[in-house]
Image (cartoon, rainbow over all chains, first blue to last red; front, side, top):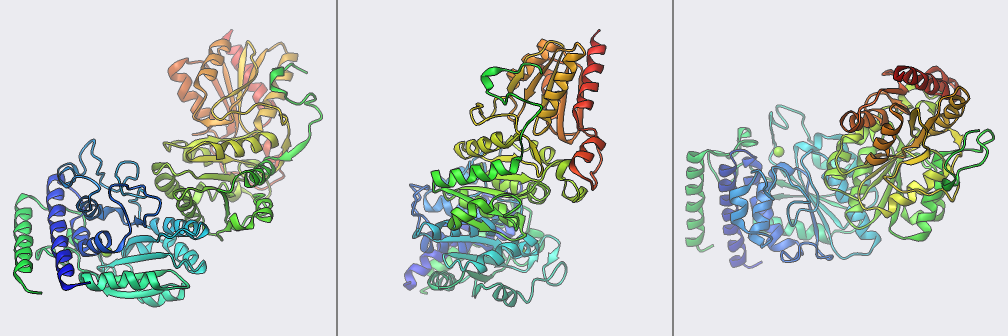
Length: 285
Length: 328
Ligand SMILES: [Mg+2]
């Protein structure tokens, strides 16, 4: 990737953050922190990694992307909108409102680009395993991607899926963990139910494990490329992220897991995001 | 013996019926499907033999997946296959699917409208000596409230085979309910079967017996005995519990003015509940429910248990007689 291209995507990730803030402010409910924390990863996915055709969401050769922790769908909708699946304004103004195509949690039958409905944690990886199994059976060229939260690794069904994916050596499957170490009731490690040592557990389940900075576009893209090139088993990318990334008063705060910004907070957040975009545009690298 | 609708090509002799488990019909249906089309996959959770999916495995090992004892993953792997254009059939005991995987069935199967066909084998009290933990008596109630789902409860071997094949031909989620034990074969290969169409075995004048699964046979015996006592009972086989064949059931209630339901399931939330919900709105008539009366099962031999839990023609007859008296 050229420096120019990286910079373009970095700026786009901040535009997507602005979409998320506006949509959640208008919706008056929803999950802000996780959505902001994933903006860089979703930008990398939809503008560099995935093979897809926004004008033909059902294109048979598309890579499949599943979002297992459905509550962070605002960032998904924003990325899909910016990629051309639908009008960004429709998303920003109707999210979570009666009659909308943009449900509070992803709904396959409502939203173009959404492969499977989700919202109850711990289900997406199993579906991804099934899709990867089918793709391998058919010798299909596409890959299957699954986005997951860290806290959902507390669900037993995730480990059932890990066991199957590892056993079947599904190297057409890449999953990532949004490792922000935050869940509703606090820190995954300190307050609730620790996941560590996570890498070792995943390797014991026969997964290839890559760790990367979830806010560095270049590292994100490289991690997905390495995962795609790996043979003999599925890959789990642990993306270290900061919940609320990009808005200083939200960063690292569990309280921003499940609440939207009010008018005032949104204004403050948008100003900060705009300033950051200006800085990036001015800065040489 | 009373006369049943001849167009249905049912067996001639109800006193000397052959007995085959419904799960065998499932196994045979899957093998036929496997040969007919290459998009059919079969998944089981460490129960290939007792769900009869081993027969499919033998013929089409490349499309058979043993998921191990992990039912939640099994349902969602099936969803992944379905969303990739396959037609997956999932089979384990009813207590595990739908039992253990209800959330997966709710969101990933039903909300998604994924083309997954899941089967609960070993449903009902007649599972026998394994006892309460393995006798699925709540499976229908637990999934009947889910939108987009079709629920099938075939009565015998042939109907099970036809239900399995018909499930593959329709688009959308289907739950099929089977039993463990050998049960009377009352239909034939020629008997028509259509998902959503209740089968009127006999019209009757005084009371309608509406049954599902192996209780259909008990309803036939009951109707025969009732006739000897001067009561003309109709018989309807409701193999599709959802969506209900509203027209046929409402018409029967209108004609006879009394309904007895019979099922190998808890009294709450199953066939009887579904019929009561329908009739209380469309055509209220006095009803009685032959079912398991809000209690867990226990160990025993199938026939003993059916007697002990009041799931025989005798309870159907008593309920019918009570209703006929009530009408006078
Ligand atoms: Mg988290």
